[in-house]
Length: 152
Image 1 (cartoon, rainbow, N blue to C red):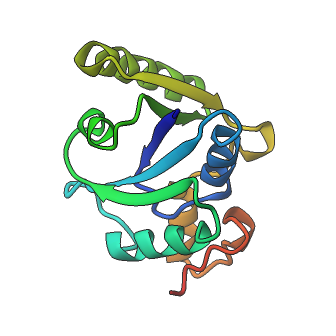
Image 2: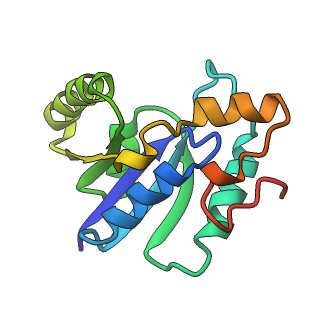
């Protein structure tokens, strides 16, 4: 069975994240969406709400699991018995950063990283921008997957 993790903060989970998961399901048997907990990051939604929102979004998809984790992503991948880490790439800067992390993860644990380039129409969508729009009371539904309820 080909199992991958898709790690991130997902604060919030955007249409870009959704696209990466849907595309990963075309070549993976199972994807574990791993919500990384990093106490040094200020988040808009608490971890429990992010878990609930994403779990509800994928309630009808048995090949998706949603979990939170602390520590190194590579250790989470090993705990989940995942042979792959899926990452989305929007920019050249993302690529350079992810390439370095992928090399380290392969050396540490033999886990391969698969980089999926963002669809062109989604390159401007980021959780950071969506959070900023939320802070100013703007409607963010165009940037969220249909069915993601941020008002849980």
